Length: 158
Image (cartoon, rainbow, N blue to C red; front, side, top):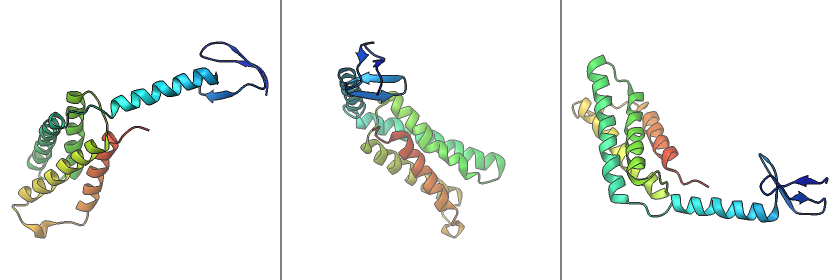
């Protein structure tokens, strides 16, 4: 190994000294430890102190707006454009993240999926007039996409 400077403190790193490669260059052991501790602290803050009741209300309201958009797209176009249903978890998540400070957790994933999927099912049933014979196996694809979208936006960061 050759000598190089730490990108954080600019200290010269000798050939036999511990170093850690990052996108910007090399870090000395002290700077790397400090950076790692700061990242872990910030990740801990993102996943703690979550106001779940507020998140539930905000997500429910946002998912309701998404359901209204989905119904409006069906009524106005005469076509069942199921991709519009992705607005349920998307708008719901955007509202609850704004309300609770952009936090993420497994509990928020469960909440988002638990609100968005039943709302999608109820909306579909209401649009069909309660007729289950209108069920299409392709609906399972939309269920998966809605669940994925709810998970993707709320999954805990690592």
